[in-house]
Amino acid sequence: MKYGIAMFPSKEIQDEANSYRKRYDPHYALIPPHLTIKAPFHADDNKINELIPEMRKIASNTKPIDYSIKKVSSFAPVTMAIYLKVEPNEQLNQLVDQLYSGKFPSDMKHPFVPHITIAQDLVEQEYSDVYGRLSMVKFDFEDTFDRFQLLYQLENGSWTVHETFKFGGNEA
Image (tube, rainbow, N blue to C red; front, side, top):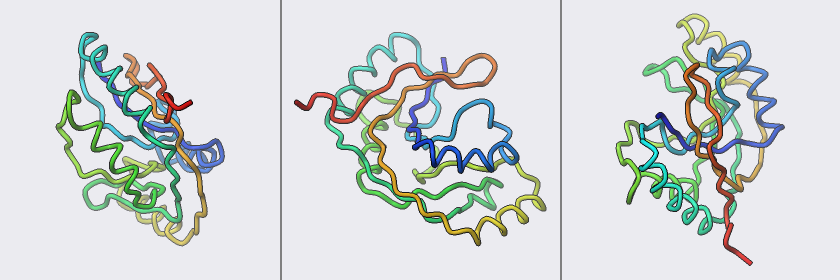
């Protein structure tokens, strides 16, 4: 089965992202706006059952992560995707590093760029128009992630939560 690990932003940020995604993201109906912290990977039940205690341990030792979004950015010319740029954050980088080490599959295909996708699979002209317009918009979001989710992909391509891991779960 295909799994991934993500964090979902606040409703306010999801609403903002969805205002663009419903028009510019063909994956809009497959998963809510999210920040991927471990790219999709394949695992059988035994492997997932081995990883879940590791995720619980990581979450219990992680403090809530403050983050901010100030602008959009893009992966062009590699891909015509536009995203809300989550400002660089050492705590977020450390969490991602843990999810690519130890018992976890460690095949990171691309460097970690914290982002929430709002447009993808655009043709070049549409990409230029949308990115040009959105690059002039100033976003001002401050929020905190207090959990991450292990997701799995259904046969129709949509993603659903398998388990949620709350940060600081073992604190008194």
